[in-house]
Length: 323
Image (cartoon, rainbow, N blue to C red; front, side, top):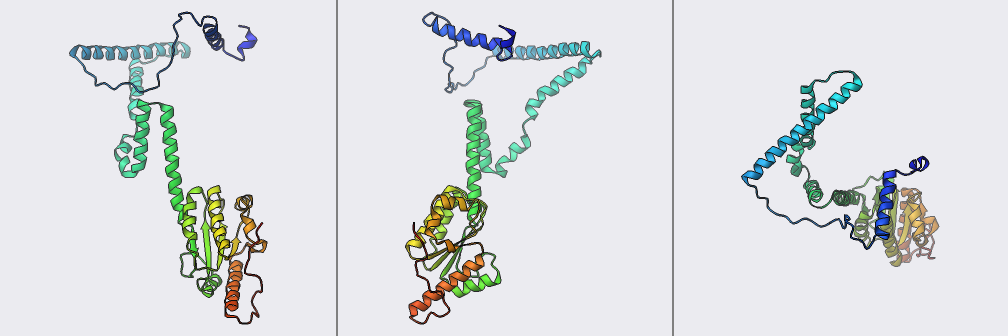
């Protein structure tokens, strides 16, 4: 093989590929021994049976393998002596060989294995499942299954954690940090304003919590969706928020969206969610949204009583613009 071509492909690999191609094309019908199909199924499990003669053979073979390892170590040490111009100590070399063989046992954290079920039952199941798949199936399959299941469990835990940050507030005593003015505005609304507060990354696992919480807006006249503390929003969470806004619009409720900017605003625009809310109802300040919401509640209350509307906003009840 020319030296120029050796830089691009090893000669052994080229010979293997060319030889295989020739055997399959030119000598395809000939009776040539080939490797054939590599079995992928599980082998048949059989209980081993040992006789006294077999035990003798195993012991002898074990001693021979040990001796072979010792000879290999000592021969390697002799070669190293000739290169370094030093003299090795055979006893130390053999002790080092024994330590190296022992690493295969000590590489496992036996103390953790004894306590793994106490730390995490799910983690233990995954670990032992991957171990069994590695032994009885395939290492690649075991790693793939282990990573997949571990990711699913991680997403589930994150979803549970972030679901606690999805809250609906209609009372100043609810568990959320509000300033004094916001608390007063919530009290003035008398349950007619629903603050839909979301916090943290909105991944797809949070969509169930969003759907559950938005069902609480049955008695509200105004819905405020607060996204100020949301750094990013996934597709499924965006669709869940869209459903909440659509339900509010269909029931003639006023809708405000607070803090939608950057990565949070992009999915709202792409899914057309912003078309359901008037442009002036997108605000950056939650307090201002509460002020306008309370004014709307007062206006609706005055309109319902048929009294004068001086001092209240005179705008139509449909606060949405449909595309």
